[in-house]
Length: 91
Image 1 (cartoon, helix red, strand yellow):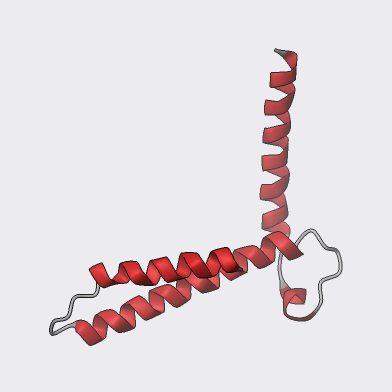
Image 2 (cartoon, helix red, strand yellow):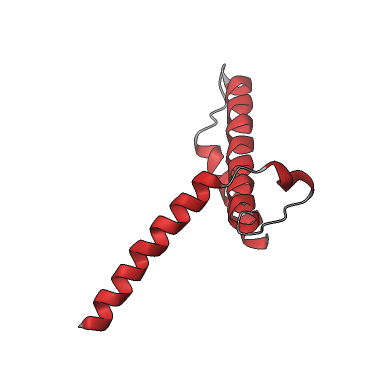
């Protein structure tokens, strides 16, 4: 969480280059705010998928997660990495 906070702080510091103080300043602030909220929400959603999908029993907010697609991707990448490791062992 600390690393994410630091990352978010630096992202906000970088917005000063995009948000120019002119006629459209208010619109840019609103746009950047929504974009930042979108980034934070999607980051926490992905973190929830990675942390909660392997569990069979999910409770609370995470009970409604649909993990079928995530599990397909996870199995595919596990198989891919397993093939790479076995190829390296044969060398």
